[in-house]
Image (cartoon, rainbow, N blue to C red; front, side, top):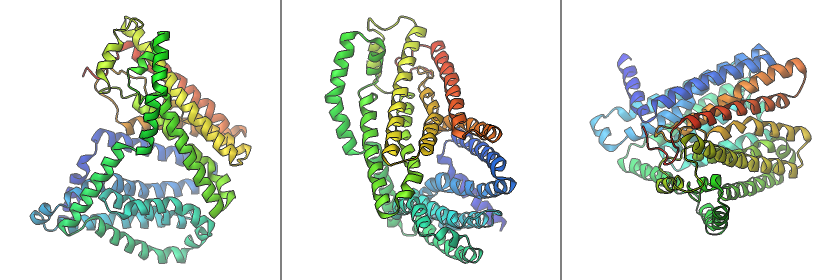
Length: 466
């Protein structure tokens, strides 16, 4: 048993080496803080039993998430035909380790006290299996992930949550979940060499497709580049608008036309999904959780703000020429201040467009005033994203995207927790308190970011210093 445990430890470390150690550690500490803060808020609102249930399930759900997102992408690369010849028992150990971890985590979640976890457990098993299959390159991964996303709506519609949470049904379902996990894990680690190379080729195609982007979106962005963008460039050049000309040095894909096209297409897609759900399931379900789907529009300005914060390597020659224009300030502090304010206005415009589209979408869907207030509060909670582009752009070092997102989440998690406490004491709605707090945090973060840019060397060309 000691030798087997050593093999498990060695395989885990070998598979997890592909991940960035600093980012993983940072995200891990954030998850721990988020679980503690959420548990404290739940305990203050619903009692100690609800907090115990949340901590118990989180203690097993986090390792399961770590397995799917960190271990599996590296583990499937170890299962090559060459390694199978050199280390004959490696595939068996990988299968054993994956099955053991998944089954222990599922059993731990199932044994959580003071919680109805039948429907949640069903969803977690589907999501874990789908994530693992998708990470391995199996064709069924995307299908299972989509099915897990839609399962909550259909399971609630059919009234299966109460049935799945019954102790007898929950106990009888555990062997079924274990069998599904074993079958899926064996599919993640094929024994035949050709099966491994087929899955490897499928993963490469998925990554290549994701890097290229959607052809329709690129075509629409190309229309903007050839039409609207050219008009905007001529107008700003004739006006000698220094801040806008600085942003033109970032290229034609960093402007409002691109984000408008993305928000418009995503709004149409979410509207069609809402109509389909209202037609096949229930209009009440759409009105109840429609704000959650509309909030997905906020991912568009978040992605845009992240790209605005990573200017290194994009159009370095144009950025150098922007410093030579007559309208460019001559000192680093003035130049960076002007650039920082232009980036801030661009990020705020993207956030405002996405927030307006989200509120319009739920309004058309017949949302109640309380739902509109909830969505408006969510939009205000994520407004710290506008500070992501404000950094030392002359430096080549930059934060990974996941760390930047975690920092943004860290900014509003304390606001939400404090809002829960104040709402309990004052009786006001939670979002009515959390939104002003988040806006105040945004102001402080923006001021700090602008001061950082003013104290830095010339931002253009970006990424030229260590």
